[in-house]
Structure formats: structure tokens, C-alpha cells
Length: 171
Image 1 (tube, rainbow, N blue to C red):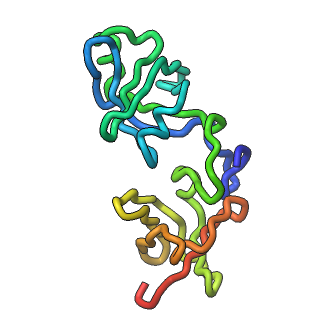
Image 2: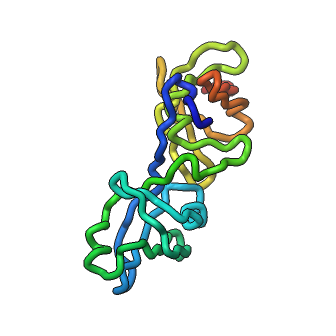
């Protein structure tokens, strides 16, 4: 997965992982809203990237659904407040995903194929992260919302640049 995405494009080296929502306390800690499956995923990183520059994470802990992080060089509230609303990136090479798990950024743009007929239904235009499960937004002749569960998503192939979808009557 390091070299090329399913669309024949190089995978981005860095992935958006969250946003610094606010400061926390007076000692320069920041509250990061994670854009990941869980806050603990983001809290495990020892290095993040802000504005393209690496920043060492001195400490990080999960509080509710946020990550409270102390960052190297950010020692007071004045320096922390300058980071508010900055997007946090992680390096793709710092992550090892379990088999069958993919970054949303890699799924968007894949071709959506009917698993029974092979017909191209469109492309995955977006992935909605909903409480029950993710939902793929397929844009083609018409827009379809497909739950990202094994009953509907039979296969995701980065090599083929496609997801195979089983449609049900009425879809």
C-alpha cells in the first residue's frame, strides 16, 4: 500500500488525522479532535505534522473523544493558541493497518462495481462516518448510499482500484 493507490496515483505520504480544536490548561497542551476510528489511535503517535513540519508529541492522553497532547516547543497557552484550527497530519509510514482496513483517503476515488454483473456503478465520492457504520457515497448515473458492511461491500482491491458491491432489490 505504500507505493500507489488503486487509481494509479501515488498515495499521499501524509494523511489528515485531526484538527487542533482548542487549548487545554495553561501549560500549552492542545485538544485535538481526531479524524480516526478512535482517539486512542491518534494518541499513540510520537510525531505529528503541522503545516508540513514534524512536531514531537511529548505526551498524549484520551479525554472523552479528544486527544490532549503536549507538543515539543509548545510550553504555554500563547504558543498553544496559535495552533488552534490547524490540521494535524500523520505519516503513512508510521501506520500499520490490519488486513482489510483502509484509510478513507484511499477508498475515495475507487471504482464501484456491481459484484454480480461487473457493471461499473460509479466511483466512491465520499465516505460518511455514521454511528452504526461507514456509508460509501457512490456517484455515477445516480447517487447511491451503500453501507460499508460485509453484506454489501464484498471486496476492496487497491490493486484493481475498485470495490465490489452487492446490491439488493430496490437499490
